[in-house]
Image (cartoon, rainbow, N blue to C red):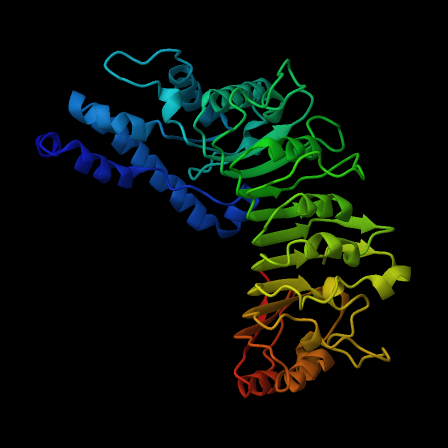
Length: 446
C-alpha cells in the first residue's frame, strides 16, 4: 500500500486523501441529535478517517507531506474528560509559531473546520462528567483551549460549536472583543468564515456573553453565508437595529430560541437577499408582540426567499391581540418554494382550523399563498384540542383550500398537515386534493 501511494503523482495522491476529509455538520447539536444514530455514525466515521490520515502521515515523508494538511484541516471534539487530552495535543501543535521540521506550512494555516459537541458517539457526555471532581476546571480549560485554536485558525471557513457560557466557563468570551482582554474579533476577524453553527448553554438568566453580542459581531464577517443558532436568548433585548448588515447571508436558522419577535425581525432586516429562513421558539410569552410584527422585515426578503419555516406553537400571545396576530399574505414572495408555518401564526389564534368556524370571514388559505409554492406544511398544536382523529377530515380550512384550488393559480405539489399527537389519515381530503394534483399527507411530528 505504501509503495503504491509513494508512486503516485502528488495531484492524484491529494485527490485520494481528500476522500478522508472530515464529514462536516451543517446542523447545531440539538438538530443533529434528533437523528441520533446518524449523528453517531458520522462522528465514528470521522474518528476512523482521522486515525487513517494519522497513520498515513507515519508511512513515509512523501505521503506525510501530502496527508498532514488534510489531517490538520479540521478538528472535531467533545467537551468531556475523554475529549480534553486530544484537544490539548491539537492545541499544542496548532499554537506553534513556525512550521514543523520537514513541513513547509504552519498547521494552524491548514485548519478550516472546527466542531465541538457536548457528547460523542462512544457515550461520553459532559453532563455525566460534571459529577466527577474538578469537572468545572476541566470544562473551563477545554473551552479556553478551543477558543485559542479558533483564534489561531486564520483560514477557518466553518465553525460548529456548542458551548457553555457562565461566569466561570466561556468560549465566546475569548472570541468577542470586550471580554477577557480581547480587543478584536478573534485574531483574524473571521475573514474567511462562511458557515457558523452555534448552540449556547447558560446557567439560568446570568448575564455573561449574550447572543446579542455575537449576532452584532457577525455583521463584520465578510463571507458569512450560513448562520445557524440553537437555544439562544436575549436577557436585555434592544429596539435598536444592528449596527451592520449581513451582506452575503443566504440562510438564517434560529431554533429552540427564547428571543423576542423584534430581535428576530432585526436580524432579518439586517440581511440582503436571504434565501432560507428557519425560526422556532422553545418558549416565549408575548404580551405586546404578534406575528404580523415580523411581516415588514420578512417582506424585505420577498424577492429572494425560497424557504420559510416559522413555528410559533410554543409562543403564547395575548388573547386580546388575536385580530392582528396573523403573519400576513405571502403572495408577494414569488420565489418561495417551501413553506412550513404553525396555524397560530398563519391563521390566527384561536384558529378556525379543523372546527366549524365561528368567524364571519374565515381566512382563505388559497388567497394567502404564493403561486409558485411547491410544498406547504401547516403545523398544528394538537395539545390544545381533543379528538383530532375524528375531525381532521372535516377541516373547514382544508375543504376551502381544495375548493379554491381549482380556480387559483397555485401549483402545489404537496400539502402536509403535521401535528404533535397521533393524527389519523384523512381519506376524504386526500382524495379531494389528489383530484387537483396535490399530494395530501397527515404526519405525526416526532
